[in-house]
Length: 202
Image (cartoon, rainbow, N blue to C red; front, side, top):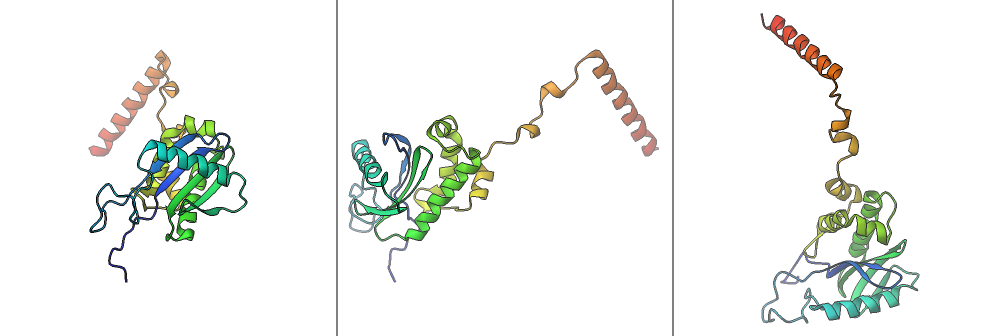
């Protein structure tokens, strides 16, 4: 049995434009602790972030988009990393793990992300909608993955934790009648309630 068991399983989660491989959302993770004998700045141990600076990340994302835009499968091995992906509208959703990571687990994460976004964005998962609802998208990603550790893969649970309250549940000032007649109705209602309570109390 391996001595350094870890829950860390995701190196990156990416949402990129399929047209020009521009970054919409990108989160790179590294294991919280380097193994014994490895320096903190080393990137050659399992779980290390292989793309520590922005230049490396952009190059990886550009190459990844070029490689996957014509693929028919949902999983590839790219740059010694397992990459599972889904295309939704004009965006590509990627989950990147190490070469020895479980592909089914990573695939469940990308499906959870796709389905959560579909629920939250009302089946309109495209670049413009994602940018307009960036707060919800970012929260959904954080609910699914936290520092490279998979927390939840049920899209209904994720979307319920992230979603805004329905409009009908928010009290609206417009529905309150502030006219003279409305205020008289409120006064009469209050008097009736008070007199009824006093009768019940005696």
